[in-house]
Image (cartoon, rainbow, N blue to C red; front, side):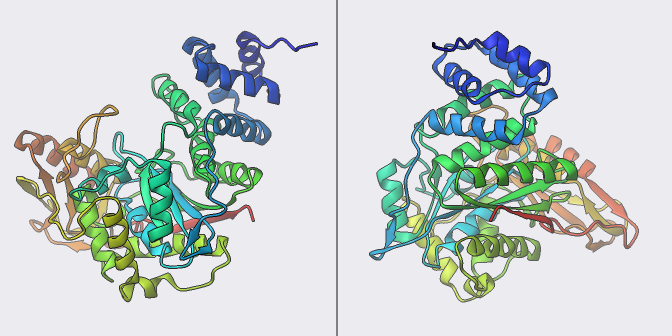
Amino acid sequence: MTRSIDAVRIIEAKRDGNELDDDEIDWIVDGYTRGVVPPEQMSALAMAVYFRGMTDREIARWTAAMVDSGTRLDLSDLTRAGRRVPTVDKHSTGGVGDSVTLVLTPLLATWELAVPQLSGRGLGHTGGTLDKLEAIPGWRADLDATARRRILEETGAVICAAGADLAPADRALYALRDVTGTVPSIPMLAASIMSKKIAEGTGALVLDVKCGSGAFRPDRADADELARVMVAIGTAAGVRTSALVTANHTPLGRAVGNALEVAECVEILDGGGPPDMVDLTCALAREALAAVGVDDDPRERLRDGRAMDSFRAMITAQGGDPDAALPVAAHTEELRAPDSGEVRWDALGVGRASWLAGAGRTRPGETVDPAAGVLLHRVEGDPVRAGEVVATVHAGDAGRVPAALTELASALEIGAPGTARGPAGVVLDRRRGW
């Protein structure tokens, strides 16, 4: 006898704190993706999950149902120079000044492995990897499966947009959660992230789970729980998964924006760059390499030019010109220190200032200004004298500068020596599923 399942009973079960079984989860995820379950019912369920949560088994099944809503790529037979290579990927939960992916992806590709990095665009105060790379003339994010595989085999690294065939349930559910106040739900946030990563076919995955004001989950305990849940999901799906919980109370690096962050990444690939960015990139690289059984020093490959060569090859393969000049803002305005002391920056405020300058968007599909953003001349813990320049706002539209400058000023605090909280990117915890 065929079992009868309906949305109302599923909503009531979760409302009352009960655990949903596999059939109920499969049915409602599939039904909403196909338009059989209406938005008001899925909204009610999302809110019930927000307050009642899910067990690890429920979250793993929910993630699997979203993966099964589309295509799951198989990269197990991927080759480079005629030899099969393991695949490894990285995901960040989003932060301010976080352009690690632009360095880490080509860096990892200098070993005999492949990095299929499917990335997204920025929304709100956090930047998007694709928006940053599109500041490079000619570079394109939209690649079909054939092009992605070819570039991976040729260069070992690709950064591109996920195809419409990967986890379509996630796109439908995220749009709903975005307008119902349920985006921060840890079970649904974890399932959203992991469904795309599992669907892309990577064999190993390292997660950068951020906490602090620049993160979507500012609280350390929430970040720890999100890391635990995502590692459990990946492990259940057969992906070697680990997570680093890292600090984002203050911006990572000195640049916040699109072209500004690309320029900073090029500096790192050339053997320089801000120490906090370099340290976090290398920490994530070591974790990713460990997941595929490699024990090596990533710093050497930043210093000796191999990572830069890999970056240039990746950019060229995706239509970009690594030698082209990056966009430059038509208008800049300096922020000066109001007092003498030690600099402290609030990551959220700096991110919002960059967004107000034109580097971000308020809705999906909106155009961003590739040259807009904020460049910090003094970072957390640096000493400063009253009147010295601490940051510069960059904008293509002069009308955006005053609001951005006001927001940036509110993100700055000048304290007594010894009051700074330390740099961004510090690894606070590590979880491994292998």
